[in-house]
Length: 235
Image (cartoon, rainbow, N blue to C red):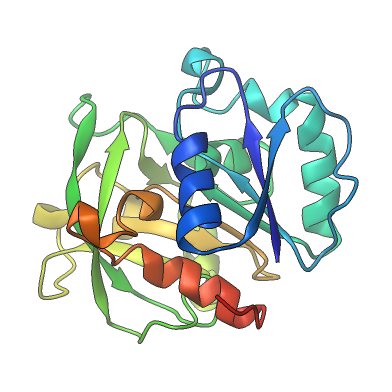
């Protein structure tokens, strides 16, 4: 599997992601510039990653300008053709703005930037990034965002639930879902979702920041392992 990591003006987690994919997961990685027009050299067996950061300074609304970058047209076509697309933090915001995932990410309910380790409960393992996890399994992965409050209307939320598109929820260490363990006020404690075709995934937490033992946490690596296992790629 080859990975393409898109770099927007203001991206700041691109090199972190490239390090994990290339040095930890031992996969081929290409850095992609937002002004490129195509994804030549990539097939639908590959994965395009939209990393975290503050694309275009989060002006107007997080992800709202990045959505119109030249390369996003190719990313949308790639996703619609069945290719894997994974948006993390700012990347999740861009995917929602581009219409590849439903809903929107709003300012945190406390109106503050939040950076800390949080717990996530696996809600569905029928997706490439959760396939190696057990339903109900709790992982600890850090968040770092000011606009991470997932929001959608009730009909959309119900549809996500009914289709099994909610992948991860904020929870306590023992897996309890409640307001006390919802760091940003996200609707129904939603931290990560996928599209109906299950090839586009977005999440606010940063698995690339929890993928090496030297960092004291390897829970995030489970998601990379899942994707590679789904694609039958040797690590």
